[in-house]
Image (cartoon, rainbow, N blue to C red; front, side):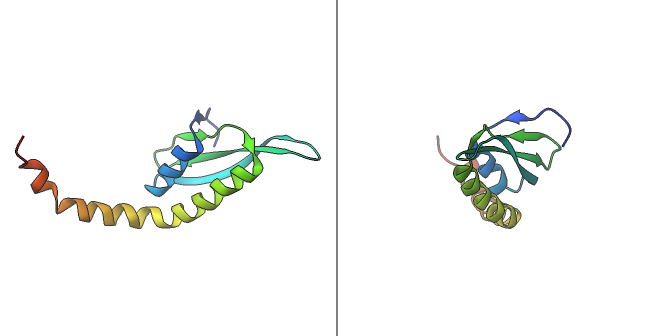
Length: 98
């Protein structure tokens, strides 16, 4: 992950993972003291782009990581299932009365 990352929100990163677009991700510490840790998530997408979240408190980062781990496993199967379901309703959308 050597290129300059694009800044996105944690929620947007979760959405990308849910849709199967996140290839890999890692946590990078921004600031660390005895009482506080701030980190961000840097991710490489399937299209080769690199994105990162803003620096935030580590408990929030860890919650996003839990979601990313789950969505990364589910993402590709959810997208395939959704495409199959949507193919059945395109006729209705194409022929709707306006």
